[in-house]
Image 1 (tube, rainbow, N blue to C red):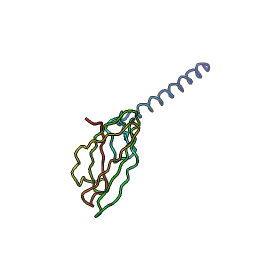
Image 2 (image 1 turned 90 degrees about the vertical axis):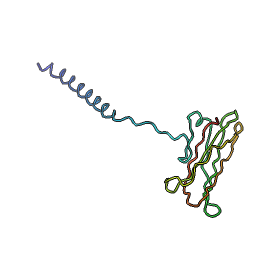
Image 3 (image 1 turned 180 degrees about the vertical axis):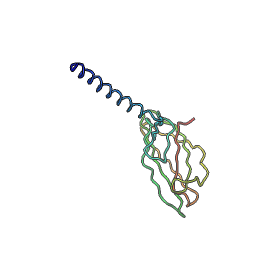
Image 4 (image 1 turned 60 degrees about the horizontal axis):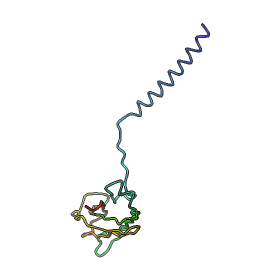
Length: 141
């Protein structure tokens, strides 16, 4: 009988390890959260597709107050490909901090970027109440 004890003990340890592993896997299987990756480094700039994110580089937005306190934004967009890139963009101004939209969303505007070139998207708020902005960029339709 003493010889069977270690064998049962080994099976018991293996069974406990398996049970702990299974418990850990089940515990890790809670609600599945979607992967939320920003396609651009800057939270105010939204690229509409992963292919666009691989072909385009967005430099850090430059934000200034001008005139009577309006918010002026300049975003440099670089074409990483050897083909001309045709894009549309639209923007909106928000109250700070990341609050309600305070001006109408602009219409879609067209921009053409030469192969391996860059262009700067610029826009200015109508009122000094603007504290932040959102910029959407998509392939031109």
